[in-house]
Image (tube, rainbow, N blue to C red):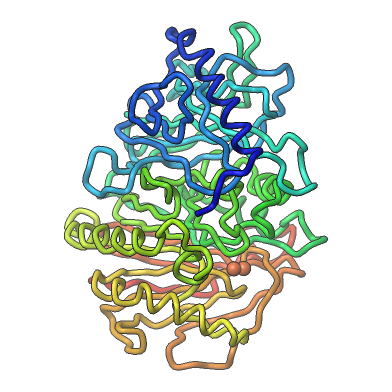
Length: 494
Ligand SMILES: [Fe+2]
Ligand SMILES: [Fe+2]
């Protein structure tokens, strides 16, 4: 069981005294109650590990990883130059499918950003017109101290606000910031949309592995792909991990957010951790995903997006890496998966498709044959569940090319009722080799990120059909019209 470092404990005690000092003076704020470990509201001196956003039925829990500071409530305190950056759109909610607390992207969204440490304002203003941001919501923040000598010395404060009670399929405009009355500091106005009702078509992006090599850090391929999603009107992108080279490095995350650009304020980038995120506090701080209200928050989640049930898992601790299993991740994850997929499979009349995404593939024709052991670990943990619950599409990355397998049941058997396994780790990470033709592969191709090439997918899904187009980004400086469709297929209905 990892212990909080002395630095984190010091920050936690600052957080505690802050709650003690300001808990009574914020009655007039449109603020949110917080709950402590004891379940009471804003206990004096409590170390907050959970937060219940006002108007939402769910509780946000703090992932138990080293260095992640305790939650601190919003206060009208902002420095003159809060250095507000990395505004990103996400989703909150719990993972108990069918309950009021369950994540609902058609009625809620989450926004995160960062500032320097002394800014405690965690507020957004929002509304249905960019000229009339007449509603407000308050959230919480926490600090991660500098972990390596790259990036800001103060380690940065992470802010998070959750908004619920919205209308499906609607565009909302928002800005983030806050501060003392008359001295507020606000971001530009951004916009994002809630998911449509289940009967409506949705477009879902498919990407992974944007991380670059040391010395080549501006992520030009990812910058182009994120721009494509924004221009296309894709509202949700499933990103299967290895966003950055080193999850511990804030500078890597800043560059990833800069490359994602305004697309990240609008499109919901649903992230699963990869091995390069390495279970670091900064990775969980940047992810804005639903999660269990347990120490394993954000290590697994699911939500219905239009006609698709989407499941994210962190497959590193307890599955690929036997050395990181200190919070009983595997048992908690597998029990939850079985329960969640059982409910999703029974709900196909309303939400007909099931898509899973995570980092390490079940199958891959990588020339890195030493990876066979990790693939066997993933199949050993998950294959029986995927077969039992008839998962339609499984998305992974980790291997830096694109490959799609024929629909498979029980691992080695082609069957139209089986799962379509895809590997797409081609958003800029260094190219890997592919083995020659194998019987299970339906399509595969390499790419050359040194030429600015990348591979990204867009699935167009309604209740009757699930169609996927995979595109090759031609080269740096190209436009969407230059991209070519390299693979196109339709998933058979179960
Ligand atoms: Fe990886
Ligand atoms: Fe990778």
